[in-house]
Length: 450
Image (cartoon, rainbow, N blue to C red; front, top):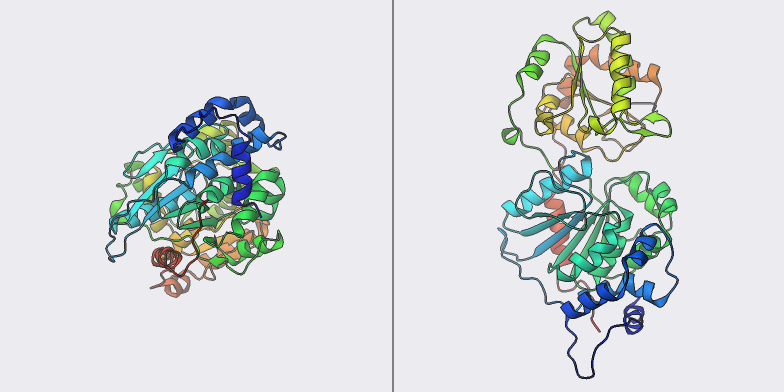
């Protein structure tokens, strides 16, 4: 296990110029460490290279040492009367509207509304600034910068990292300072991500699992199985899916063009994906399958409509041009609407759809699937990932099986809707808050400092 001893040894091997009897403050250690180590080392390590000198080891680990000496957080009382603060590290906040960013955004808003001191740090630029959300270390080697530029100044009872394995180092650092650390694993391809991660991140994650004040969360049973498959201990892994209900009241009115399309087409199918990314040569969101489906569907339902929700389309202009050409080749221009802006109102489109399509070639827990089900909208989804039992599944990338599943819903639509009447996926907010409170209980082991 990586312990405090190696942090102290690494610190002793740095070139800090401190005079005898001089007090070494946290701030002076940080400034001197940043001055002493050229950023060339940092860039080389960020590219996956292993540390080759004591200085490079120090560069990665000194932040863990100095952060343990900062004063504890000043929390405020929550609505429940329990006082704690939480700091969350995530790759991005909406927009873009991916499942992880939406989950963290809704969790942050609920915590703040309940009077819990919540701070979210995004390593990518936040397009829509909001209370308690900040941008940190938004450069190529963001995770290493975080250890020095942000981490030493974080004062929170709890630290919660989401998604990226590269956040293992910040999480490990905070386990020596915060009362509790959580890491939510959203990636259902974690086994592959683990094999591609650099060795330092893997070592840090294994060390994190050995910390007594650490709690791992998997968003589905499949993610937990993946964690066990890569050799991480499963005795403390909690399975808590990422659904926190949306609010239609807070979303803007639909633009007139979209409202008109929804009123003049039936049935209306919707499909969502953040830009048209390709994985292993396959259209990851399944936009191509959805358009091909429509070419068949209009023969039976000539007024059918497909809404392609594609924020970030500008990131893949060639792929977007291909999809528009596919629509033209099938003569589907009157039946297909591309929506690439205004993601704040996407949930209203889900709520007004006849069927929500999720024909993904790669996926996570898919918050959008649970959202559609919460609105009583039948969902047809690929079997590439764990799905709620209410979803109708088809074999991933099997066009014929996809079309069979969609037709089966349309042919029995009243019964399908009736089966979802009153359905409400479990709101996981209270489950997460309870996990936080349990981690803060006095009988939970807390780190000791040297």
